[in-house]
Length: 343
Image (cartoon, rainbow, N blue to C red):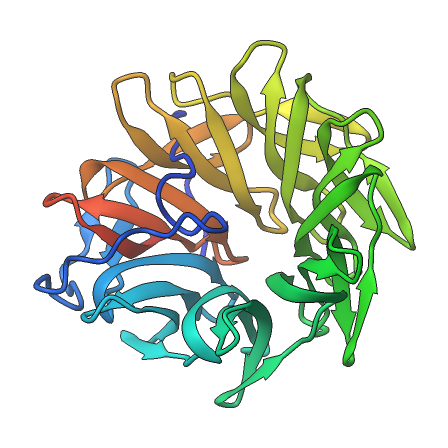
């Protein structure tokens, strides 16, 4: 699918939804489970409400086949990992408590986290209807955040010494990726070449975006501030994320060839990127300058506002090779919904 370049206008910021422990609250079970009438944004994209298991819903990833994963509250207030395809939202189950899905590859393998009966969060790999516990780096909890088409999985885990480290999991083995010199690291994305991106604490106690490849963790630096985080990586090693600038603002960035490029905002102070595809189209969210947060797609130097379901909030989380974008938006009633943007 070809995406049209449009005049800039971007979108969304990490809100209540799905950022580590920040899950949305339950409470909109009376709303329709699936919206069959897409809304047309001002850019020509259709914004489709993907429905819900009974409460609020959101998405985190989409593969090239259009399969979407994320989370939804049920009508009884539980959180469940979901897989959406062909208009149907499926509950992927749990190890005993709440669960949430963060990534899906082109083989249909899904990763995320679930509470176990012990109360610990555990990383899972779901395939063919079976949810498998990936283990830990020696501690009690683990969180899976990204997966590539080779089935390599990244995320973060507690170590045996109770530290918080990024991992790479492959063929049943979990590898500690180390840090940039500090005591903390998280991995968010991995490409099919095995390059991993995330964030790590440095020896000077700053949190910086990193690119890990061939056993080495590279500090990607910042846009001028003391904080940055990488979330998506293309097949060519281009990286998308967000960084503090020289001021207190945070801006979405694209890193390539050793340079971090500021992607700007939708006229507000802050922006952030959650994902990127191999066509170098970062997506994320931005303040608009008029009191809203809108999802954006960036291409050819322009930030495109993807619009909302009729409110002032949306955020784009991932984009596939076909240019389909997924994320979350509040509708005209202010209820959070998993959404798909498509031309």
